[in-house]
Image (cartoon, rainbow, N blue to C red; front, side, top):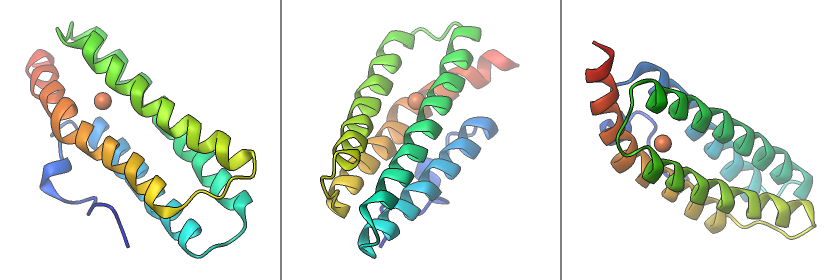
Amino acid sequence: MTTIDILDPSVRTGDAMVDGQHRAILATVREIEEAVQNGTARARSSYWLDLFRDYLIEHFKSEDALMVRTKYPNLERHRAAHRAIAIEVHSLLSASQNGTVVVPSEIQAVARLFVAHIQSDDREMAIFTQDAHH
Ligand SMILES: [Fe+2]
């Protein structure tokens, strides 16, 4: 069971770098869901959540650099959205590392936040930054 089809047009921003990173992150979300649903060791969900967090942080840095480079006017608002998602992922990871069993609905809730962010903030950003590129 997956949260979103990673090829769904609604999660495409049109920026090749951003879209490639989104696909990799959403593929990782799938792996997490599977690991959690299969009930394999808690350690595995920590492993995947750790990876998810690393990918997200790297990805947010890339978007941040893009927004700074193109002087995106909604930079601060976008940064706040990134921070909010990072906090949610971090709290799941901490819980998992402390031995709490993370359930699929918790992973899906964070994934939905990320997808909603792509569908709104990231698409809006990409429209601006792509114009700024050319
Ligand atoms: Fe973003």
